[in-house]
Image 1 (cartoon, rainbow, N blue to C red):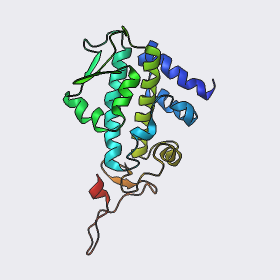
Image 2 (image 1 turned 135 degrees about the vertical axis):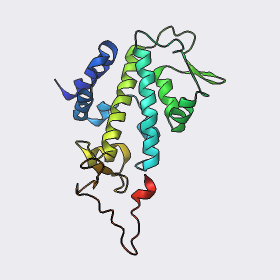
Image 3 (image 1 turned 180 degrees about the horizontal axis):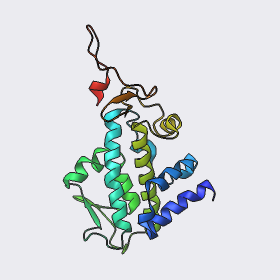
Image 4 (image 1 turned 90 degrees about the horizontal axis):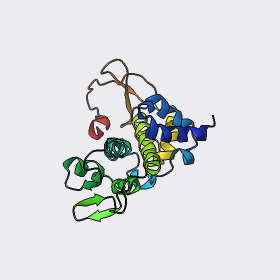
Length: 210
């Protein structure tokens, strides 16, 4: 199977066999060329905060919620109020609406009609376009997975992915991984971090960013 076809497999699985959408399948998407891997999302808008820690965390949290919106629309048992999204919903306000481009993703799902207090599907649309929703949801799933791997320094193509998605490597202070249990390790050397306090020592910036 050509790598480009892997992306089609993911979209079809989201529609017909959602239980087949596993981490292993998502990890196979990294073999797909970047331009084919992401077919719908406006990545520059969503990732406008670049490699800065707090902004990246906000995007990851928003993607988690956007993923649920997409899967709900693809489910044969959609939630009762699937047709609209309310801006005053506390979860929406603190996640999707907290990042640039969040509402645009909802419009890609089909929420294109503006309400005084939210977005909805147009009255003329009886059902979500499952093909389009699956394409957008696939983008969201892949990006969510890639960013989670990047911030844990476990992406199989760490530097390349950071450059493609963020335009730069993740700051060393933000990119921490774990060794044994709670012990923190330097991202590049994988050596335990020395937390010993010495006289006249300036605290590592990691304590500020996390």
